[in-house]
Length: 182
Image 1 (cartoon, rainbow, N blue to C red):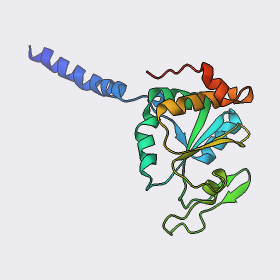
Image 2 (image 1 turned 90 degrees about the vertical axis):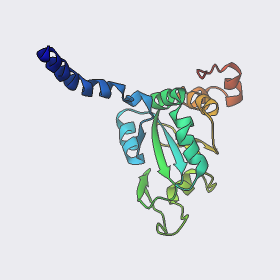
Image 3 (image 1 turned 180 degrees about the vertical axis):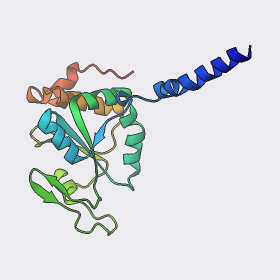
């Protein structure tokens, strides 16, 4: 009986890490976020559109989008399928190269000093959260400002991800759109 218990405990000890690992969320259970540099390099190898979430550390609605919209399984599915997702802190101090041009935050130690790339991508309309979608050539296709719920983000991801924007207006697209959200 002792040997049975010993063998059982050893088996549990051996298999437990595998079981625990299997219970952890897989990469498909969350959005894969990249830096702009990483997304640009990936795009050069396998072209895809780039979704840039422009946020700040102090923005409450940005945090709400991270906690609700960007954790929704349908949003995750289409984000990972069609885009290289990028987080861009609009007040970061890092130097970023975009389309061969260098962008900086001119006063990185100053409170609420905006990075030049955020200003450029948002065309001077500094509103957070915002997101920008780039085509596979790194050109801006669209920008959207403000907090968005999953039901607002899913059609946008699909409209641009499926290239419907090249054939019809968003309004026409929405007339036949079928959401995968419950």
